[in-house]
Length: 179
Ligand SMILES: [Zn+2]
Image 1 (cartoon, rainbow, N blue to C red):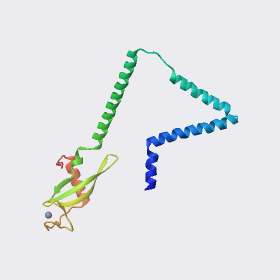
Image 2: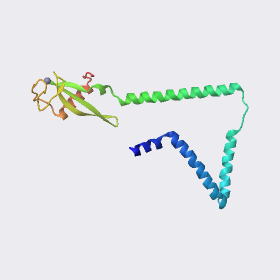
Image 3: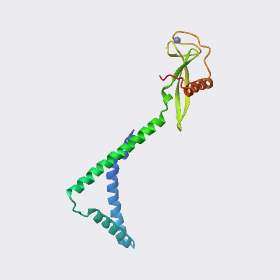
Image 4: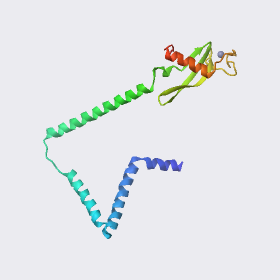
């Protein structure tokens, strides 16, 4: 329990962010002390200089007309909207490729017995699993060749392999009713 709580704290982006910042300040201090006392000094100076250069580069001030800033702002928003649109298109495409039309076809009656099943999806390949025979009158699972509710006997329960063929036949010939 305590360990999970600890993990939660470690996964918190604020904790990670602040932690990293504090750690980097510490590391910089330590590096500074080490670097100033060894021959690494010149290398450290180069790193510091390039860091200062980058900092100055990004802190440069430009005078620009208001219309330019507004244009930049509007362009940014349009670009963001465009990006969101493209992402939503991808999402839609993924959804349609993930769910074939027969995914709701999960029960059918073969020779007086109701069968229900689910699909196991792997690499976009659908496999029929969990084939279970039901009493069509009570919608109850058949137990030991009989319905526990109405006591009707069912001796003609089909093998899974035969049922898979029958279901596939109805899917391929679009003879199924979605439930
Ligand atoms: Zn029954």
